Length: 153
Length: 388
Image (cartoon, rainbow over the protein chains, first blue to last red):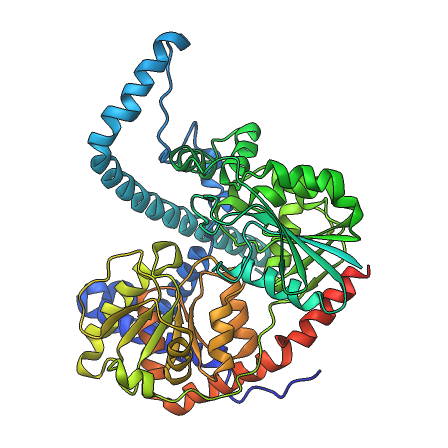
């Protein structure tokens, strides 16, 4: 079945909404002192586009930086009770920690858990932005090299 | 054909997207086929406590085989193991254990599949993440049709044991093209025959009037959220974004009405009102008369409430972090989407300021439902896959 073309499209209205948001945000940042970087609206738009592209990477497995970090790099959010003792000694100690100590300090665990999650989110965003900038940089470098190789350059 | 549907819970008293879809499909297929269902005795999806009698019963033309849970879900152990999987720290053995703990653990159902599974021409498994599908499908893989109802969540991203499982079924029924792509990537292989069926929805026959809304003191113009008010559904972020909208719009802010059971404290904000669980007639009236439905969930395999809003000619504003919702709204041209507070405020303000634009999106959403989601079309697509 063929459908009639849409009278209004989601994409067109979203573009209009986003343009207004960008204009407001640009004005606010310039007012608060970002004029050196963003006096030119076109520069701001390009930076905003690049950040948007970077932040659309939501799966950390798509990031290169973590593969370059040695050892565990993520905050470990699961609570384990590892032990170096033999099973007979370890079992009652684990029981005490889980059933007596943990309930008492659970509020502190949950508070820290929330904050570690937030920090982790910021870390991922920064890594994604660095990755996108690095990829852009690599493309520009290749383009410059290509231009330099042209006769008369 | 002799068909068996395997699902974690079943019955008119069971609320839940995939369970309701299973029942609706089973009932309709029973008009042309001999249909049975194998399921648990549970009504509660958290504990899987046995609540309904085990044994064989009838649900219209559908024969229902209920099997008791061996135990209730051990929640603390399950949560601890979930954290390990989502931290990429779980071994393959622990991941298998996660599926067992996720439950419901139905040894009787697995024995039934082992002994009688081959008496059926096709066995449809609903929702891959629960134990009946995970442990049951391999027993009858040659005749299994999987309806994964998968969401792009931490399980899909983190688990390392999904690929061989996703290569087992004879065929697939997907709810959206995004789900098909996701399962294809997770299977790391070409998938068997499949169809994207969505879910069927009946046309609205009577236009609900405002009487019920007036009785509840709901103003003429409002935004609505329908469903569980829950952190997992993105409601905490939605309420934060709404506070930002209410602050910028002041007196002209459209109220946001929340209709559904509350699993989250609702902040005291002017314009934000929680009704709790509402009856179907009130739900229909809210979906008919709202300026827009807000759907904030970051994880959906198909949003039925979005389809219902469009069925009533109402536009939607959805969380674009959910690929499925983003795909649905863009394919339908049935509303707008947001990724953050600024976009939430911007999209709500745009629809609040332009009633004609909202109506146009609503009309296009309804046209999309007419094109893609009516039951005769859905059943036709299922029949084509069953015949493969």
